[in-house]
Length: 238
View 1: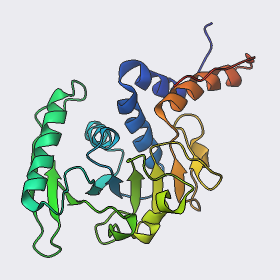
View 2 (view 1 turned 180 degrees about the vertical axis):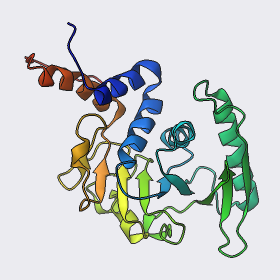
View 3 (view 1 turned 90 degrees about the vertical axis):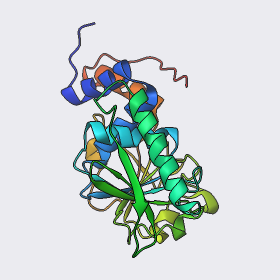
View 4 (view 1 turned 90 degrees about the horizontal axis):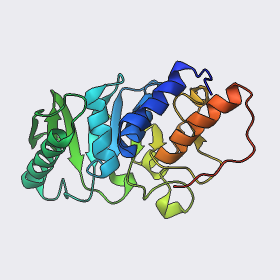
């Protein structure tokens, strides 16, 4: 049926039609973060598949934010020092060259060390991003690294059990936490760009951007609901 949909919903559907699910999810996350009044952003799990897609989505459209810090255990980014930073820089350059969309192939990533803080860093398009490989969110020093908002992209920290609660990032100095995975309780606000962006508000500081499958499904459902077409049954298969 030829039913109308608003431009924001169409944008969500187009992402999932034209890209892989994780690329679309990363774009949705940054789209949501753009509505939160912060600039400096940190990524926990920045070397993982979601984390790297977040970096690439930012390169294609900065969304008014700046990456300031990355934490990931895979490269032991801090403990292996210069070699870890160089390995991560090379890894990102390869990922950029594989990516066929957004004209990011060929972007160079530099690496080095800050003599004052001791943090190793990478630099992309002039933006310097400090690196760490801390297991505990409380030890990440997000505040001193300029990350007022943290994107929790490991999938290990969500909501619930104390040792796996993403709110531990608050003890690491950040002001807002956004999950790139579904929340599992009532204390996290789930926001899907184009669907319910009005849920973002000045008081809340703990959000979830659902999942790639959920975001794609609710865009279709919103078109049906907004046009009073009704629905008898919906089956969600991930």
